[in-house]
Length: 390
Image (cartoon, rainbow, N blue to C red; front, side, top):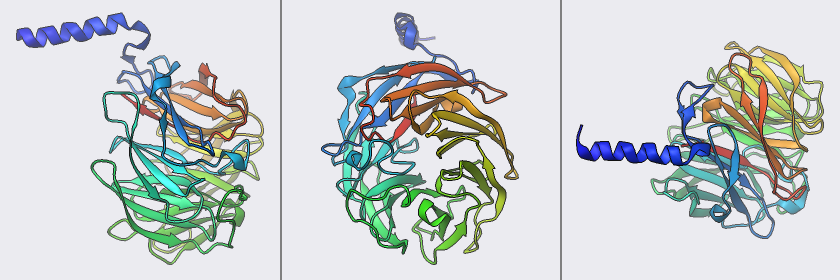
């Protein structure tokens, strides 16, 4: 071993010893070395939207990094409502492939890209582009494409090419043809289109539309741009608000108005989706947000009941409610994010202005609280949480 390599190893070891609270540890869920990571929260402030940054240690604890707070280059939509002002999932998304964060500026009809690859914990704003419509509320990434859902007017989805340096190039906009709505805040966020996403094969765009009790799908062309016609699939439960995908392609949908979750087979061509599990009830109130864990679990935010529910899913799209209240939040849980490859779950508790952190226990999916981080503005229109691992 060369003297240079030996010196480097000794330096790294000394640094880990000097920082025991944030030293690496074996991830209890993933079986890999966990060096910690970062959790981001979007203020959605109507005057000037910002991202707040929290350093995560391997035990799941968070530490605010105040100097790393960064502007998204636009205005949020917090003044639409104190809780869930955008009525959406995916207002803030981390894209690990490009090392970028994408955030909506609902109050100024724009979308922001921020680079997280630098040495500083403070993301660097790389681009702000018009969202291609009115009141952007949700974003999704598939390969080198960014999709932005605009909830205003007749609804639309804009497609952008993601450049190597975080630049965004508009490629086109698909009009969803919904009943005309407001083109600026205030707007009716609950019945509006609520989330955009792409199926696991990157062949179809998916939009949840609570007001229409439907999922909208459209095929993607070879450039990843959605084309018509738009197909509507009626959901078994009321108020389909948010969705996530299993690794086998099943779409799991949280139905807020009926407090339930339904499952659908992957889309095929222009056909409607096929239901594989119909409105499995949570027994809780306002089941709005949902995240899927690769080990066969799904977690839902029951915002009205102040709880997080746990489901089990199968590769054939079957669903079982495991625990309607697997954990309690500190006040109106909304958005959620997984960290450490699924070892931790964080919920943004909008009413209390807090983040709740839970360890996900392997084998059962049960939640064990490890963190309660306060200090965010309570009942002030927060929206959006994302996480990345080191």
